[in-house]
Every structure is written in structure tokens, then in C-alpha cells.
Amino acid sequence: MPQRIIPRIGLIALSLWVAAPAAAQPSADVIGQIKVVSGQVSILRGGGVHVASVGSHVAVADVLKTGADGKVAVMLRDETRLALGPNSELELANFAFAPAEQQLGLSIRLVRGVLSYVSGLIAKLAPATVRLQTPTSIVGVRGTHVLIKVASP
Image (cartoon, rainbow, N blue to C red; front, side, top):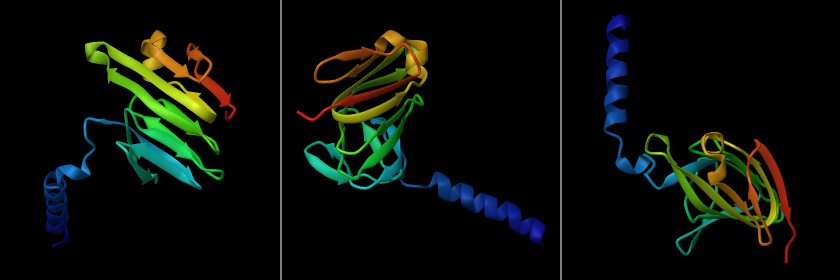
């Protein structure tokens, strides 16, 4: 009897997964996901403010903001890792990751605060297409790990 139940449970689970609503699956606009959140962290998107939580998706043009006690870590689709410290603000300005079509690029703008950047596949495949911008400079990435601090104006 138990041998018959196991295949049926697997079949039920598969049918529920296939029937899951499309809203539960990430859209094509999603470029990454928040992996760690501590303290006050928000995502500014399309004029709205959303509280960031583990599992929240991020998209091009999103702005990540941390409060005085905030920290956030994000993993982009190409395995680029971004981490922001307290009182930071970062815009995800551009992201293109379609290696088969040779469309690669990443541009982020750190307005203020501290950013730890660990390169992913875009930097490995096309390092010249990665730009880390601050109010006073542009950093071209040729290595794997960069730490940037921008003082508040």
C-alpha cells in the first residue's frame, strides 16, 4: 500500500507546481533577489516605497535605501553580490544578462553609504560593461571584490 501512495503524492505535488499562478513566478523584469535584510531597508520602485524582506525581487531602476540600522545583501541573476551598509542608497541603473545574445552590462549608482560588490558572470565575460558610479567618480571593475564608501553630502 505505501508504495502506491508515494507516486501519487509526487504526481499531486507536480500538478500543484504546474498549476501555480504566474504571479508566483518571477517576471522577466526581475534582475535579482534580496538574500539578507537587517534593520530598516526599503525598495523605491515606480514612485512607491516597499519594505524589503528576504526573497523580495529587485528590478532595473529600483533604488535600495537603508536606514541608520539597515543592512541588505542582494544576489543578481548573474551571481553578482551587492551588500549595503547603514544609511546607504543605491540605484540599479542597468542590467543586461543574455550571454547567448552577447547582451551583457551592469551599471549601479551609489548615492551615499557603503557598498560591497563581488563580481558575477557579467564581469567575468565582459568586464568593460560593468560600471559602479558614485557622485564624483566611475569605477571600472577588473577584479572580483570592491568596497566603496560615499560620504553623505
